[in-house]
Image (cartoon, rainbow, N blue to C red):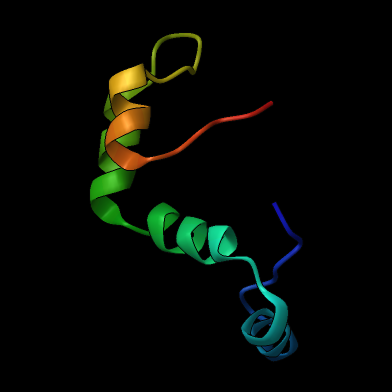
Length: 63
């Protein structure tokens, strides 16, 4: 994940010219209320999500 600062005008200008599509996709997804709700509901007691959740939302969690 990049060091994109969503509050910075300069970051947006840099992202437009050299940004990675994954960064934009993640910014949109993490702000989506439906995704947030699904994430809260899908987490196990250890904080992991199911493969169905990952497949539905097209995400891969890394540590």
